[in-house]
Image 1 (cartoon, rainbow, N blue to C red):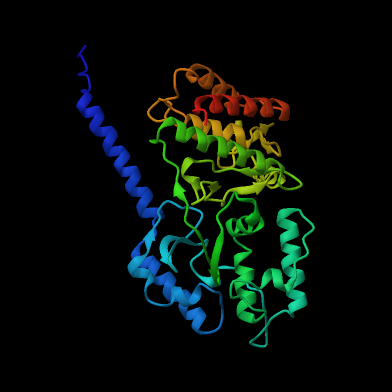
Image 2 (image 1 turned 180 degrees about the vertical axis):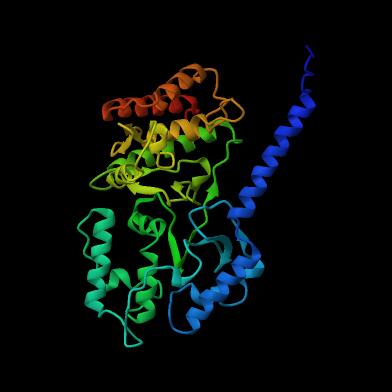
Length: 373
């Protein structure tokens, strides 16, 4: 028998750091927006703009030559090819596009004998309304004044622009929720690219009273998503960096790629197919259900559970490190217990009444932690 030497703490720490650095490098190099990709995107958009294939109030700025020098790319947005921040009209905005090329989107026109046939304006309005009704499950009837805004006109370029934007889930929900104070304001568009207001990131390093106020706003947003439409909206990519704060102090959702109606999430889960456990049926952070080795159309968790687990509690190296870590002694024990109840047990459905009671309990605890005004 030869005694196996123990791995030193220094070696373990070094290995851990190296692995983290490698994962960061792979993530950034795989999903980052590099200067070359940004230059290619700008060149492509401006070529299409010059040729009359797209339009919008953002186009002249994107094609002014100032963007590549002043833009700051935002990496790790796996649902979008393009995400960068830049100053536009003395305001900081975030410019996004799911795919960098206009040709990557389904076209609105038909080819006939080498010529493009675009729909008439009434036909196009019908196409847009039909698409919105299908995705949002609402009886929407938009007019020309509703659709042709932000420098978009009822022209072939305008139709290309609107049709490409509506094929992007994030833009569609950002547009649908514009007047609700839960998503960023749309500032402008240029073809398939769109600009929204910049939101200040949430920080877990602020004093607890500040984080408690943010958490209370998050709870309001979660409650709103459950009631704003005929059926609930699910955020299936629940992360602290997918929320931000506007100038007025409102907490808004910054990343809506995985935002979907409840029934859409159920369909996506069922479409996963075969499974050996519930985990195999998950749709991003939304928990699916496996029955007889097939994913069925059942969602096992809700937005509040995901907020409690992924944002309020959080986990780093086995320790709770989320937005509500380090609570004052007056509520710490009760808050931890309530958050653990909020997260629920794997595979166990939580009723709407139970969810409402948990949310009310959390709101009460957070209010208690705030100084009297």
